[in-house]
Image (cartoon, rainbow, N blue to C red; front, side, top):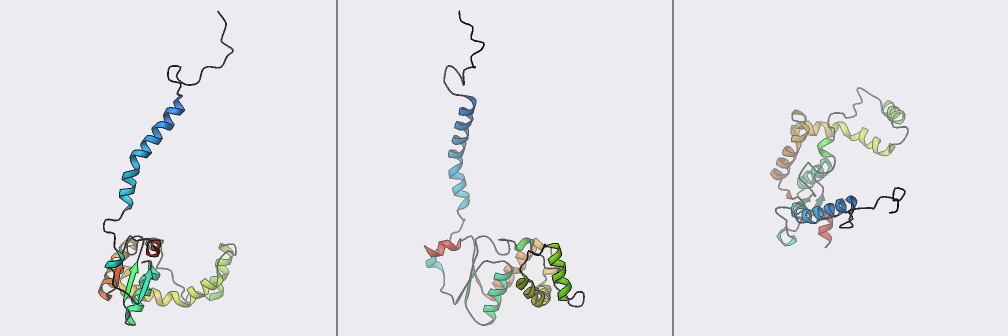
Length: 185
């Protein structure tokens, strides 16, 4: 009988020819195949709007975060019919739930030069100077508007309720859980 101690051990199960790695891959593929229908079902919105259900509008606002809410409300003040489309829910998409509404530029506390110098140093000169100039010019007045809406007296995650009520009271038509690319089909 030949000595086989110097030969490598056979890979996998001798009876089936499958290794443990092969069985793990097969298990993962089976689990993925079983999960696909559930993933697809959960990606479909409960109430998917149809384009034919929409009223023709003067202005389409894409996104219902801070900027979208301001744009929609300003357009309504000017008398336009507004439809707002969002991939998620009002005030919950993008970065709006985490956006800070408590740190405006206040010229009574800082000079614009101090603000820029601080940003330059702390951001290692990697920031959009023009955007910061716009922030310096407008953040305090926006802060005051948010204060009149009641956004400072609630938790940041509750602002979405305030935004929704303002939009509904203004007559903005809200279409949620719709990807903008769906409009192009």
